[in-house]
Length: 162
Image (tube, rainbow, N blue to C red):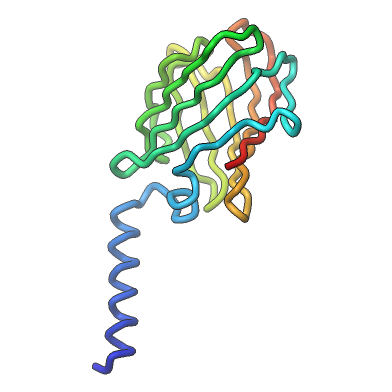
């Protein structure tokens, strides 16, 4: 076997190892999500509102999945902190702490850049989200529908940037 074929076989083997080591996270998601994201209030819409004053979303790789922490200041000036997971993109329910509206969330990948999340409270579906990672990996958008902690219908569009 010549050097070029050996290198090619090595890359094929490495790709196979990585694909089996991280089956539930797409390569684009795993490489680009693990970062800190800041809410861009000028590009986001919260219906019925009011919008939070700030929000920082941090994703970190944990084992073969992720953990997300969302910290910020709500519309009334109170600090907030929600912790999601650790979780995998397998459609199973994982714990959420620090959020009044829901106590668990499930995650499914739609494709390399899009995920669907379902948030529940005591086993009842409260919210559904679609999260999209931009092609350049610098923007995350969340479209959320359902109910807030007060039982009001929401239809939010949140834009986070690195």
